[in-house]
Length: 174
Image (cartoon, helix red, strand yellow):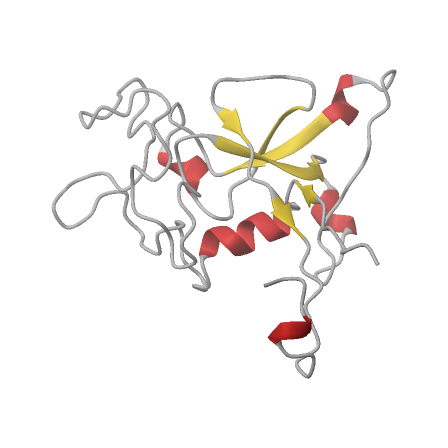
């Protein structure tokens, strides 16, 4: 038969946050610390440190991927560089009517919907944002049909797993 091919998609907001935290619980930023500089005084992500001021390390716009160190999952630029689209719709009151076990609120906007229904959540902060936007728990939005120099995307795919008894020779994954 045909091998099963998994589709790539945008992460949900909760998937994005889980990946950004890198397995660390309660950390403020994706790199695990509470500070935006390392012990040498160098910035650990590409962002605007203060309103109106850009960094002296050359990050005044988007940098190449992996310019800074990865998080504990080996993911680069989960904070700073470019904000990232998620598949979730943005609604101010969504947390009041979603469940802790399924916190994702999605809505596929129609072309004739009002603009307020066409907002999608972006996470991670960008080169033009202050450090608050890079915090793992911070969320904001942009309109789904807009293109900005400070927003990118990261693809994910669902993993269905495999039976531990099947052996690697019977798997189409490896």
